[in-house]
Amino acid sequence: MFTMTKHKGVARHALHTIAVPDRLPHWGDEQGSRRFWKPVQHGALADTVIAACDEAGLKVTSETWHVQRKGLALLGAVEVEPTDKLNASRVRAYLDKAGEEHGTTHYHGNAFRPKGLSLVIGVRHSNDARWAVQFSTGARVQVCSNGLVITKFMDAVRRKHSEHEKLEDYVRAGMAGFLRTVPTLGSWVDAMREHALDEGEASAAILDMAEQEVIPWREVEAVTQAWRKPEHHDFAPRNAWSLYNAVTHAIKVRPPFGQVTTLEALRAFAVEKSWVPASLDIATPVSLS
Image (cartoon, rainbow, N blue to C red):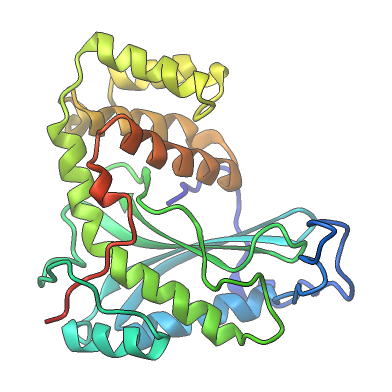
C-alpha cells in the first residue's frame, strides 16, 4: 500500500510501549466528538488485526506500522495471502459474525489471488479524534512494490471510538469490508490496462492531478519522467495503469502518511477520469452462493 524507503517503521511489539493519552487532546468538534471518544492502544489494535487475519483464513506475510503526531496516529499495512482455509463458507461465516450482508457479486476461487498483486489491508486510527479505526483495501504491485488502493479508508464503525464498542468489533467490521471488496482488485487493474492513453492525454491528466491536488506541482516532473521512461517493462504500454504506477513510483520518497493521502486521492481521480467504471467505486460485496 505504501512503500518502505528510508522511513523506518515501528515493530508491533514496540507499539505496546506507546501510552494511551489519559485525557483527550484539543482536537475534534466542540459538539461532542471528543466527549464520546475512547482512545485505542496501538499495540492492542495491531494484535487484534493480526488475529482477525487468522480468523478470516488469511496468512500475514509482512506487516509495517508507522506512528505520527507524537504517537497519537497509527498507520499500518498488513500484507496477506489466502490460506487453504479461505473459501466461500469461511467468508460467509465471517461476514455473519460481523453482521454484514453476503452481497451479490460473483465469488470465484481466484478472487483473493489477483495476478501480479499482493493483498494489503490498510489500517489507520488516531487518539486525537482525527480518525476512527479505519480500514482500506489495497495491494502491492509485485514487480515494483508500488501501492494500490481501491477503497478509501472507511470507519470500521459508525461512531468514532465509542465507549460502547469493543476493539474486536471495530476490527471484525473492518476485516469484513476487506473481504467484501478485495475480489474487485483484479477488475481495477484490468480496467486501467484497457484504458489507452496517448502522450497528450497523459500529460493533460498529470496536470489535472496537480490542479486537483492529487499530487503537488513539485512532483509533476517526476511523474512525467516515470511515465515517459518506466523502470519496468510491465508499464511500457501506454495506458492508465502505466500512468497510475508512474505516480505511485514518484511518491515513494514521501513518508507513508503522505503516500496514503495521494493513494486515496488517486483512487478517486481514476474513477473521475473513467479509468475504472464507477460500478467499482463501491463496497461491492462478494457472492457466496
